[in-house]
Image 1 (cartoon, rainbow, N blue to C red):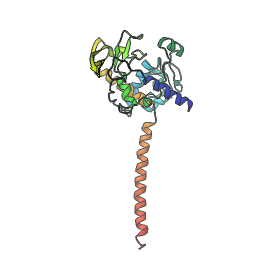
Image 2: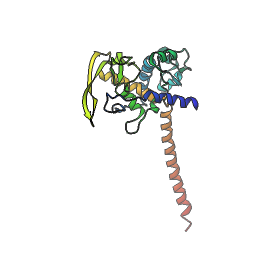
Image 3: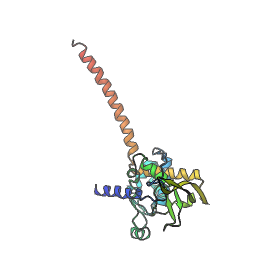
Image 4: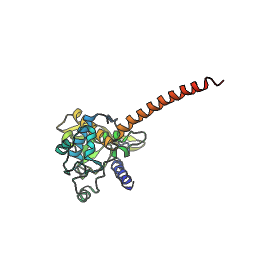
Length: 256
């Protein structure tokens, strides 16, 4: 339980940030709605591929084993051939290839574990953890004032660089100065594409959706089974209630 609590806390820290005065909303922009298709196995498989290629370099998912990906329709051999970059055993957990000590030196802190990030970052009035991640991964912009050269609208002043920039390309955020209650603030007004990515905007959004679907599924791999089991239990209780009702009527019909 201590390890799980630690993972939840570390994941929560990824989503917490001190808002910059450059944004009218001190908690970042409003979150977009994530597709949330955790039953789409093709989406989960593509999301897993993106995760191991772009996220697992720095972030671990220490409560997720590679062989659990068989629930998405992959075989052990497919997992070995396409997804095992940090280990040679499908039974191993997803550990980052990055040295945590180097990460702390470079970014000022150890990248958090992402096992339950999709469950830990929900916010009342803003959306689910999946909504946050979907927005966060699509709102990076170039900021030369930051050590990494990047900033983020959903997480202002983030220390993490844009891991998917080659796919999305480099973008600049447009801001306008407005007076809000006597205070000058910078309000986001749109994007300027500086360099093209290897994907179109629609393709990139779909790739991010697949990655978020995977992160949401990874936070509770048994969720689809749980839901199906829940419907089966409700159906059983409904039939049992009907039988009990009819037995009760048959028992009392001669008792007057």
